[in-house]
Length: 294
Image (tube, rainbow, N blue to C red; front, side, top):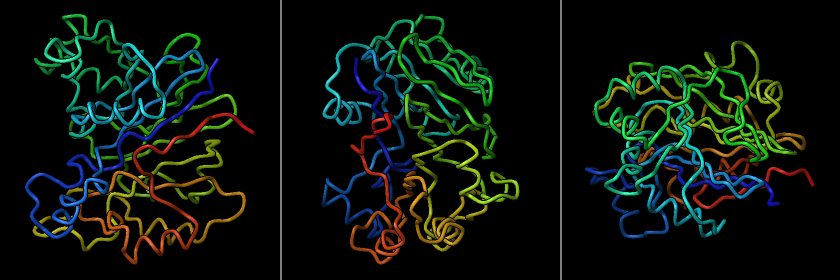
């Protein structure tokens, strides 16, 4: 039997880094250095029985599978897919499971009821269901489920506020034999998510040991000609202000879902130096976590 392992397959906001159409220095620098590229957020999980489970369906799935298989060289079709919500980078690779690419059959797609309803109302995605490519299966918020029998871990969806023009939004907690990992790439604000408690207390109440959380923007001054209120996310600066420096018994908190404008994408930035000096870190493609307690 294997250990349950979670691998980070993507760390960028939906547009990826560099972002299409961006000619600013933030993206030009990355276009000249492939090592700095970031794909839309995604996780790969390998169960104790060797089954493989994907979180989010990104259009960069081909490159992400290469990352995943370099960490866990597994073969065959994936056993399940989870989609947290219906925004672009989380669903735009769904068609890759169809006959034009992977030709998947009977792939269980775990999602909320509102995401399942959206799939049914979209002709392209409904065709995947009608052709037997995917089997949408609605979860219940805060109820843990085993994505496939005998995989050795459960997934617990946690409803968190985020723009719901298409669907609701969930974070997911991957609950392993010894450790639990939170994946929360999107939410609107800490005030709405926390409901009056601290980040530390919230994570403690959820039983989280590792937290991959929304780091879309460093602060509110990044976007040109865009209203930040249209794209609500707590900034990393605010998160650091709430957290302060890392303490001995804190979870391992790593930021992801970075927008291309975020200075944390630049490894030489003072913002990244500030983050790491406080004891926190960025998630990066290929990061791997074994959910066993030593």
